[in-house]
Image 1 (cartoon, rainbow, N blue to C red):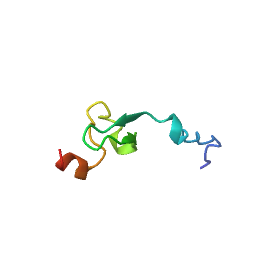
Image 2: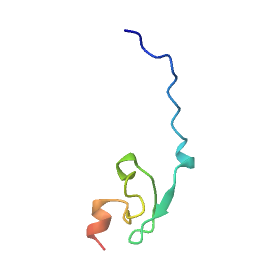
Image 3: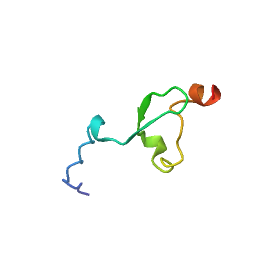
Image 4: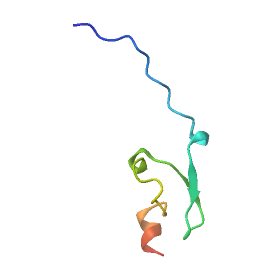
Length: 53
């Protein structure tokens, strides 16, 4: 068996990722891979921020 010799695409730079501002703590937060499927519904930067609303 032989393996492909394709190159892995580089990750985008952090400043190129989409970002939002949390309505509670008013801090910017950037896209995370775990939010890839529901980025449009993400409103809070963390669980602590969400619970202090």
